[in-house]
Image (cartoon, one colour):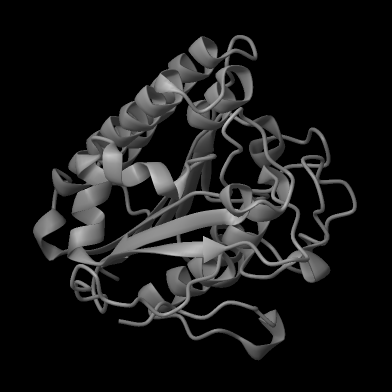
Length: 283
C-alpha cells in the first residue's frame, strides 16, 4: 500500500501582506515546517478566482487551460484536467475534493473544475453573504475532517474555503476580513488535526500545501494589476521539503507548481504529454 498522501487547502483571497499581523498558528506551523513564499500572478493571468484556481489544480497556465474568468466556459479541462481527476483516471489513485463555490464542483458557469475525483462533496452557502459563506466553510471543514480522519485511503485531496474572499468583496479588508482569515486558519487546523489522528497515521507520509489564489484591494475587490491584487502565496511542508530558515530566500514559486508538486510528492513522474508548466517545489 502506498503511504504517500497530499492535502491541498485553498483559501480564497488572502492578502500576503496582512499575514504577519494576524493570529494564524496553523498556517504558521506549516510555514515553519517547510516554507511560505509569495506567488506573483503572471501578466497573462487575470487576478480572478477562476483562472488562478484552474492554474493551481491543473499545473498549466491560462493559454493551455483556457479559463479567463469566473465563468469556466471554453476551458480545455478535457486535455488539462485537475490533479484529483488525473490521479483518479490515469494513475490509479483515490482522490477527494470538497468546497462550496459552484463552478469548481458542479456543471454550472462552465464548470466543474474538479471533473472526476474519486470522491466529491459540494456544500453550497444558503445565500451569497459573508455570514452564509462562513457557515458553508464551517460545514466544508467538518466534512473534510470527517472524510480525511476516517482512515479512508485518499492519496490526494483539495479543500476549498471561500468566506475570506466573500468578506472582502462585501466589507473590504478591515477587521471583519482579518477575523475571517483567522477563522479560516482555525478550520485549517481542525482539518490537519483530523489527518494526524487517522488510524494508521504513523505509517503515512503526508505533504500539506496551503495556497491562495489572489489578493485584494484595500476596499475589497480584485481583477486588476496592483501589487496587492497580483500577490498570492503558497505554504508547504512534508517529506522532501525541509524547513526554510526564517528570512532565507525561497526559490520562486508559481501557482502551476502546486499540481506539479502533488504528483512529485506521490512519486509520480510527469508524463511528457501532460506538458505541465509547473515544477515541484525545491528545498
